[in-house]
Structures are given as C-alpha cells and as structure tokens.
Image (tube, rainbow, N blue to C red; front, side, top):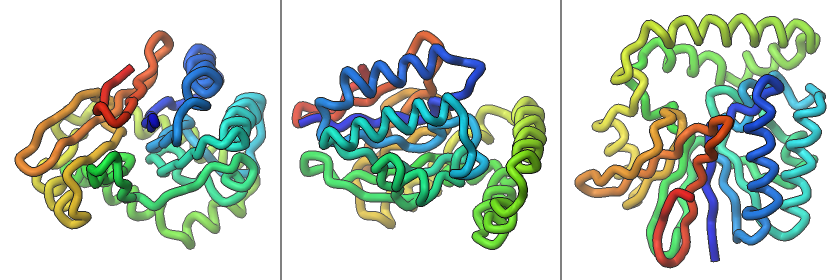
Length: 233
C-alpha cells in the first residue's frame, strides 16, 4: 500500500514540461497507490471553477481518470489556488480537505497542510491571506466577469513577485515555534507540508517535518510513503 504526496507544481501554459511530468505521474505511478494527496498550488493561480482552458481540461481529465480507477485523490488549497471549489471537485472526484487535516499513516498520526499558514514571520502575507480567505470577499470576486478576474489575478501575481524579491529567506520560511504549537494542537508526531519549496526531512524535538519540494521542468518532487517508511522518488 502506497500513499503519494505532492505540492507546488504551479501548472501553467508557459511550462508544459511540468504538465507533462504531472501527467506521467498520474498515468504511471498514481493508479498503483491507495491515495494521492495534493497539498496546494497545483496551479500557478486559479480565478474560479468557471475558467476553461486546454491545460485545465487536461488536468481535470487526469484527476478524473485516476479517481474513476479507484485511487482516491485529496486536495488542500494552496496560496495560489485557494479558489478551487465544489464544481472542480464534482467534475474530477477529487476531495477537498480543510487547511489542516490529520491522517493515520501506518500508525503514525500525521498532520497535512499547504504550509503557508506556518510562515507567520511574513506578517504582510498573513494579513493578505486573511483578507482573501474571507468568504464574502471571495463571493464578490467570483461574481466579477472572467476577464476582470484574470486582470486582477495578474496584478496580484506581479505584485507578489516583486515583494518576494525584497523578503529574506528566513521570513518566507516556517516559524518553528508556531509550527510546534500547531503540531501539538492536533496531537500528531509527523507533519507534511509544501509551500516553502525546500524539499527536506527535519527532525524536531517531538515530531518529524517533511517538506515537499516544488516541481521544475526536469524534476518532480514526489513523496512516497509505505509501510517501510517515507522517501522522495
């Protein structure tokens, strides 16, 4: 029995090689798994379930084919695609989980999340996140014409890239004290997350923290967990 964990693919039309890697994974490895967990930022940005493109259709079909074959697929929203919703879930069979979700991995209670909520030192981002996750703001945004949403998303993404250049690596990483508190709150001994793009396994005092890496044109960060343990493949 195998469980796969991936995050931060940032799929977009400008990097078809990453989409190819994703499709290869979904066709060759994923069908043999018990479940696939996508921990956020599957897409580079998402402006609503009504958006359509060749890329979106391709990804939807890949997920639908996987879930129809019997392999479960779970998703936790990232900071880029937090507007993926019910319609996408119904069309693909993918189950959307809350920001924090606990599973039992072969006897090890494991907390899953995207990872952006753990980066509390980035105060400006946390303030922005709080605003855009307000349901009333999302409802108003989704009522706007698709063309307007695209322009707004492009401006936000451009501004985010500029601000990211001015931030230190430490600010954009997880806050160790807060992360320890969250893991304790959910009473787990293992944490799996993405967002920081720093693939690694960290041993903390009371828990193990596994960080999923981001996907590149020639590299897919895939965590495989079996009865024998966890490893990146």
